[in-house]
Image (cartoon, rainbow, N blue to C red):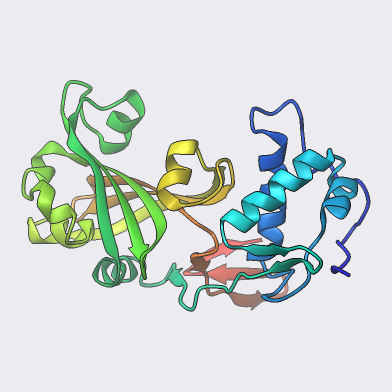
Amino acid sequence: MAKPIKNSGRLSATNSSLPTPLYYQVYSALRVKIIEREYADGDKFLNEKEVTETYAVSRITARRALSELAKDGLVVRERGRGTHVTYKPPEQTIQASMDGMLENLLSMGLDTEVSLLEFGYIAPTENIAQVLQCNPTDLVQHSVRVRSLDGRPFSYLTTYVPESIGCTYAREDLGTKSLLSLLEKGGVLVTRAEQTISAVLASPEVAQSLDVVPYSPLIQIIRTVYNQNNRPVEYIISLYSPDRYQYRISLSRVRSSELNIWSQLGALDK
C-alpha cells in the first residue's frame, strides 16, 4: 500500500472556482509530495481510488493527474503493480546567502548557463521610474534571462537598467556574463543592495521557461542595486524554482535582560 497522507481525508486542495483545471490542481499537490520527498524514489504511490477520495475529485480527474505525473517522469504506472515514484532529487542545488550576497551572485554567473529571451530599451512604468529614480520619458534597458544548471532551468530573471549604464555592454554580453560583472566592467562601483523575498505563482509563460507546472509556487526575490553614490543602477525581479534554489540566512542568538531575539547582519528580527 502507498504511504498514508498526513491529515488524510477530504482535503481542500482543489477549488473549482479557480481558472486552473482540477486535474492540474491535484497534479500540483501530488508533485509537491514527490519533490519534497514525502515519497522517495521507488515508493509505491497513491492509486486512482486513493487520489479520488483524498482530494474529493472524480476518477477521471485523478487518472489525468497521475498521467501527468507519469508524463513528467515523476512516477511510473504499471498494470498489476500500481504506481511507483521514479523521482530522484537533483545532485546539486544553488544556495545563496545574505552574507557576501553580491559575491555569491557573481559566482552564480560563472557557474550557470544563460538563455536571453528578451532584450531592448523601453519607456519605464511609473514603478520602474520611481525605483531607478529616472524620468518617465527616459529609456531603460529591459532584459529577460533564464539561468540553467546542468541543463535544467532554475531562475527567471527580469532586469531593468538605466540606459546610460546599459549602453556600456551589448546584447551578446548578457548571454555570456553576469549582469553584476558587466556593471562593474562598465565602471559602476556596486556597494549595496536592498531586496525583498516572497512567493508567487508561476504564470504559464514563466512555468514553461522554468519547466514547472503552471501556477505552482516560486520563490520571488526583488532587488535594487546601488552604486557608491547611492544611485540605483539595477532593478531585478528574480523567480526561482524551489526544488533547485535555496536561500540561506545565518542567525545569531541575542540574549540580555531586555532582549531575547535573533540577530542577522546587525539587523534584529523578533
